[in-house]
Image 1: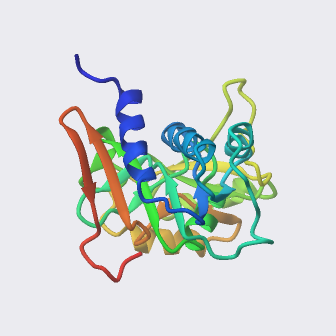
Image 2: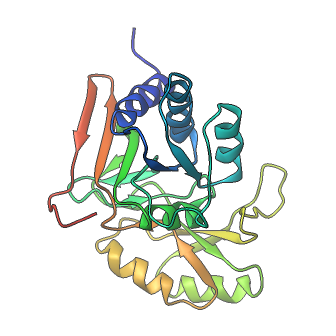
Amino acid sequence: MTPNRDELKRAAAMRAIEEVEDGMVLGLGTGSTAFFVVEGLGRRVAAGLRVVGIPTSERTAAQARGLGIPIATFAEYQTLDLTIDGADEVELGNLDLIKGLGGALLREKIVAAASRRLVIVVDQEKLVERLGEHTPVPVEVTQFGWQATAVALAKLGCITERRYTAGEQPYVTDSGNYILDCRFGPLTDPGEVENKIAMTVGTVESGLFVGRSSMVVVASTTGLEVLTPPSAARR
């Protein structure tokens, strides 16, 4: 019987959790795959594992509390040992990422940047030759002036669309911002695009995570594969 996508995600999550050691400060990701990571960590904590988690969303924080995982903030810890999270696209070879379809890209990037290691968990359908093949680049923007910000972003060569909830209300992040989903198509230089977005007034953060992956655990119908970036110098 062929495993479904949830089974694949759970298998990859369990492999990623093997990287967790007693006493670590962990970044806890957001999204469907990260849900299985937190679920698995909850079982290990119940069995005696001692860790502290910094969640990347209110949703993840609620899940962690419910499972008895101690949570903290950057007031207590400014450096994290390890973050485990999902991704919406992973570029083969360099392991650059698009994240943020779950709406937590700002907090996810803050946590990733503060972590010594970033382990990503995906199923095989998230692997692409070029970032942007299937997924827009989410960009978190301030509510004030978002229309002007959208025009400025479009000048970078994308089609912008404000994200809405299922109830057709503008999507608002945990930090009180809007998200513009920017369709660039396949990106030849994600790092350059990331920098140009960052220089655009009104933007808060983008879902491009360039040079941050330490390891990617990929689950497929044939088993698990662990990918590492080509250069040890990359985070």
